[in-house]
Image (spheres, rainbow, N blue to C red):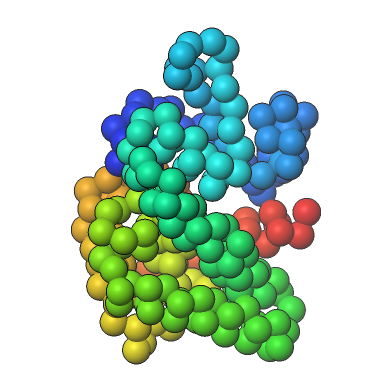
Length: 216
């Protein structure tokens, strides 16, 4: 979505998580942690050799700084964007990720763990709702990488078993993000959870691939 917003040319390379492609030596030369995403910039600012960036938050910061967009120029504005970006990296992503694991992927259902991560995800949604009641976008008046990072997770709330009733500001923001053409194009690139939810066979196939990856 960020690449689409910035109109940067890019090529997508799918990684076969179920078969452990992310654990190969070739992939770990790009990301030593053996995870997605990772990018290789073949046209870094100032020239030079291709530059590799791993970790989604670091990638977003790199792209924003490379282009001078989706991030304010001033130190305080940059700090606000970074704070809400880190909110996603440290909170929304990990909590919703664990909700997915315990609610969707593991064959053994552990109610305490499911409730723990779904409730914490809901609490984080409430924090976002309060913020979005104060400002149009997470960092204030301007759309930024903080909105992209958080939306990529929050938009899948149904898959995580988290509800958004009673959060009108979050709903307004979700709809505003969904209406952006770049976001619409961006979500067409990877396999979408939303499409899996529409078909029982596709849902089970998606769950099985995810189960294999989290149990490796």
